[in-house]
Image (cartoon, rainbow, N blue to C red; front, side):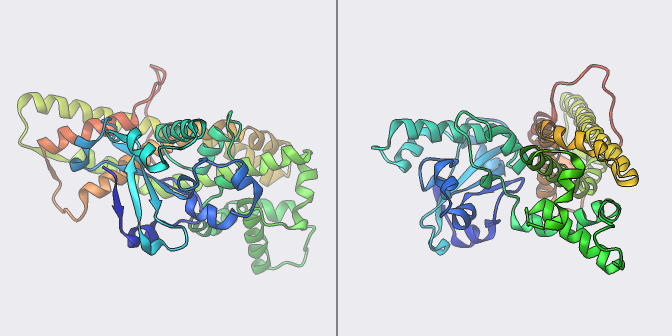
Length: 384
């Protein structure tokens, strides 16, 4: 299924880093190619693969016969013809497509080093098994791997950083004004806002600012644990932003699928579709409850820190944050895949109906995306 990709498509997917759906190794290469960690601890040993775009792609109906999986989301790899000019286009293939491995070997070269080839093949399969490319899931999986990946590959994309900056500033402004009020006692409202923006940049982009050095002392952490704490904070704020961004889409999805009229059903199809629909709604609420539970723990500790200035309250949750990333990433990925596919399917349709054949095709994929093991007494969350 490998094919050429138009240059316009390549330019459109340049992200400047990592997003939920796209791992932009091309931009990471352009930014960090002169750093030793980029070449010493790469995602892929093959240089062309290590400048590729990897995309979590929602499977279209016409693509399914070419795939070896019935999962609703697969991993697409797009390799630019050249990294100096995206106008030349690129070559694309799915990790889950039939005959993928022979195509990969042909692409890399028949004379490729076997150890390097095996590493890259395993790495592609590892990435395909992940629910998304959010940078904190990637870090949790590959930072301490047998074949570790440099931290620079886990940068949040430029586009997401720009979107997040104001949101994060709003989230931390009260804490910043309380914790750092001795820095500038004359700061007016505009000055306080700018201080919150600077702190947001300090957390998100690692911008140096010696005025925040006292935070390390307040948290009573050595350099390594302090870096881990800031990384944990960055991750929690990233997920908090993503959850806020996803909430409206999820509400629309639940209302739409609950009210959807399925046409042309046989009696057996009616029973199956209604049962799957109930399970989809239940599992979606389970995922949302799980996300809210983790965030509630953070918000409780953060409130103690922000209102009372007690660094012990935030210290514990920040050091614990990386443990949350896998759970948060999997839950949010499942919800995001379902809502994004629903929006794609609906398109410009105005009618609230779906043919039975489409429901039998789409609904089981939704349920597979959402289902995970959970306790038998776990109840369902409600989206406020």
